[in-house]
Length: 610
Image 1 (cartoon, rainbow, N blue to C red):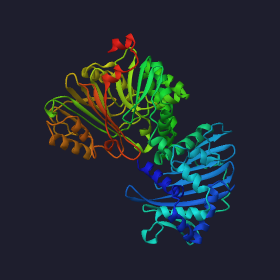
Image 2: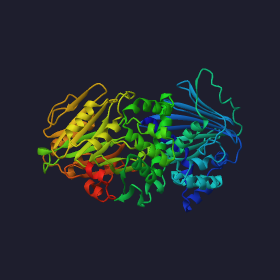
Image 3: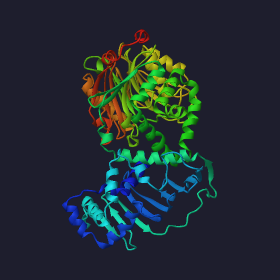
Image 4: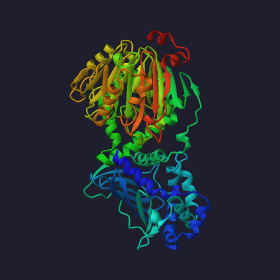
């Protein structure tokens, strides 16, 4: 997480010029007052960034307080001609160097002594050629695209004024523009400073494939450049989203076997039919959202993960899928193949992405009987997981009726057919919490087991038998509940063992048992959740159930919260926005039975499954 924040800080200061575009009288006055030295330092930098110079070098030094700790990031960007450049970024915890030439692109990781090299021509539209790269990285889905076009088309005198107006421009405030003794431009905000030095003639370029002492791995050049281009573009969209993402057009749609609805601002997709029909309708209704989700996981997160580990992320993902694949039902594979076809993407890629290891840090609870005001079971699920990669843009509540299976609601994300939070029409609800053991993938993916339980299990005992009889992966914790019988159980599962945590039982990691309650979390969040349950014991209903999931039980990375009332088929969903975690967003109430009744006419197989 800190590495993603570091990347965000680097981007934030680097594009401060692009976001300082408040054209008003104050800015105009300050433009006249901008020191000549600032304008002189700014002019060549703007010319270079606007693409007017065939060759140049810009050295940068960012000093920022990240996670409360002063940190330094240095960069060197050298453009040699219309097809070649070097980029080096160095931080205390990571470093990356990119060399692009006419026929070779290399991404080197100095701390791992590894380099990934692609040869040949580039056919992908998502490429790294310096010519026109701004248009490929800054799309209408990020708010800095218009700012970039505005800033880079203005004279340096005006840009200096706009930046001064935005930052305050007063020496006493410690913000604004200035120059160093060597003529470098210095940009200061309240939280960071960036020093930029323009060099007209860059250092002579090294051969792109010359990395003595490095372990070299061949990567298709299209894949390498697509990874870096789409990862950077998606990062900019996530951290500076435009209204296209923050206020999407809420237009309902229908396709064969599927329907997209908007209910109180939340995206809801209803799917029915064979696995292939369900997958096709999913892709047709959510193409844009699914591609954003894939960019977040594969390209944005994947690039950071590659830099962190030294391993090519897609290779890790495909290796995991090879081991997990034998334990995935054929019907799920058919649904994924059809989804990939509708998205016009490689089937192997979409299959691999659907087993993306969910190392979530979450909380969950189930309260019933004496713990609640009306005796009903309330099952809460807090999903804390990297809002910084923008999965909230793909947030979707699915209502699914696969032929011959139990219908269910799945609170999930476009492009992902597995489940991490769900409830079926038989009153069974499930939520998971990630643990340790990444890489222990010789079993059924967690999200596949969750999906199978929703489709196959009529009772809590059915769910427990499914987990006991299935090969499992990694370490996960769960809360399973059954509204028909007012019963719930906590689960600690690894590939080698499974432990059931029953209501009222004490546990070394969870504390003293609470009657008619299952409470799972960790650290201070567990302590807060337990205290809240005990303080309002016997009073819980839907309103207090949502209160249990508020901050600080939910983390800053809180992606979604769900409160299930499985006896009634009711569930409440809150999704994160770009500005707020899910716990600080409004909940929307859904009735699974009403949604199922409102779907297109069920087949005889659907009716039998219910």
